[in-house]
Length: 316
Image 1 (tube, helix red, strand yellow):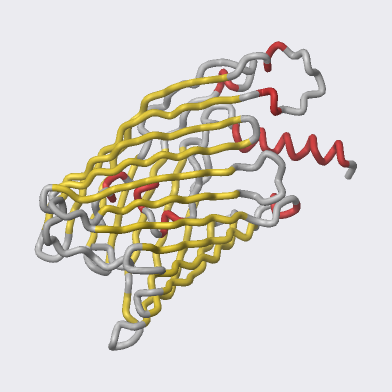
Image 2 (image 1 turned 90 degrees about the vertical axis):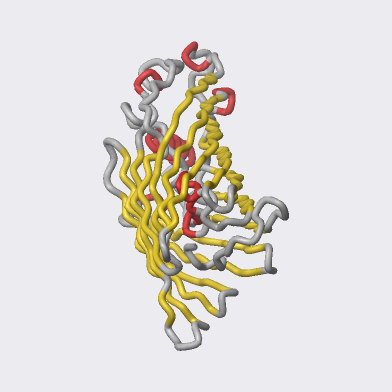
């Protein structure tokens, strides 16, 4: 395959990943949701009681021209003696000439039972879609369809439920409920795009493998549904050693085999890394996907008082 033909083919595939006629705008797909549920469920806000600050970086489809790169910063904490949780999530997603920001605030109300908690969460914010067509390698440089820079601001909101015990949780969320239309810019393509509605079902359990609880197993699943797209399923399993180190694998149906680790650097810092081994046809052009995460946890005097804070690898 010649260089020019290969470049044309890759550009075409990237365009398809951004646009699917009716519901082309995609929310970033994360692997590290495994350690930061807030990116998919607003009801998770405050689940760890302490102030949690997390930064994530995802470099998708390495060596693939114009492939997605995602930056995420989030924070959440419990307030009012662990009766409510509040959070903030900011995502910056780049793919080709397109840039997309999600800025959302979340609120969760908690109902505490004897040994479990049910959180009901809401989030609201804006999506900012921008495009700079100067970055495109066009065959026809004077095409008027590509003269303008696209800038679109769309508000949206979502909701979720999160039920958790010390060693078990299950959650359901719809982070974006509105199917906003995106203004026309490139004739015949962007005029057809709407923001998609997503549905997530997530559940997991932590089970000890020895009587001293030094080694644990942590299986979990994620069912991801997007309107007019095939159902996606993640099957995950990890081993937790001494509540200090976690290592595991995931299988994303029809897409990737994933390996991931998490390391406790101190009482306040955790570092996570994952690598997606691409299993789809993109494997012919990409070496996979890197994702990094750093999490900081701390208790704020005067805010958190003395509520029981769960261990990092516990669900409450």
